[in-house]
Image (tube, rainbow, N blue to C red; front, side, top):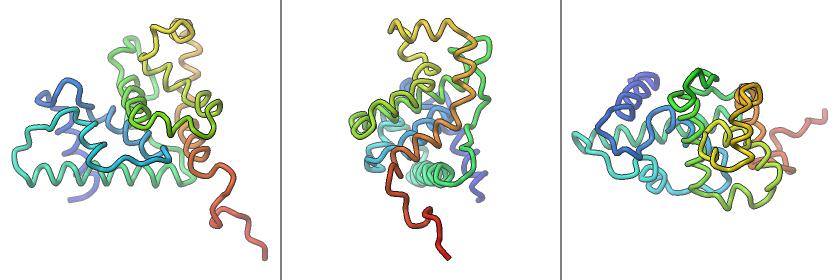
Length: 195
């Protein structure tokens, strides 16, 4: 089975109504795994898989459980490779909140991303709190999770500002990845070669 087919099966599983209300759907799970791929402190696979589902899903068989969990682990590796490459990270939804932000996939992706941040919050802000906060601001604003805070409710009301923030998300992911994973000491691979 190709990776694309595995992802289709994973998406069908995560988007099904049978999962717990707090479980992340496919787009939110992608955001969650993106945040985990950026963070310098990695939770165990068991911990993040359990957090993603909120409570264990009712699998049809042990084989299905193994397949779904293996595909999640593969997807996380795929996202990490993308973040480390020169390509702009892919987000599996339109970069647009649409007319009903609460129903948009992008909001779901950003909520999933923030769930990933919350899983290891201290690690995110340990070394470069100001820069990380600034880079996370658009994702936090688009997630809608902080709209009860005055500074975020002001942003939420400014549609032009939100649209600008939405457009920045892919490049912010790359910037966050580099900030967290290659702050000063670029690996030998990235150093200019002297001939």
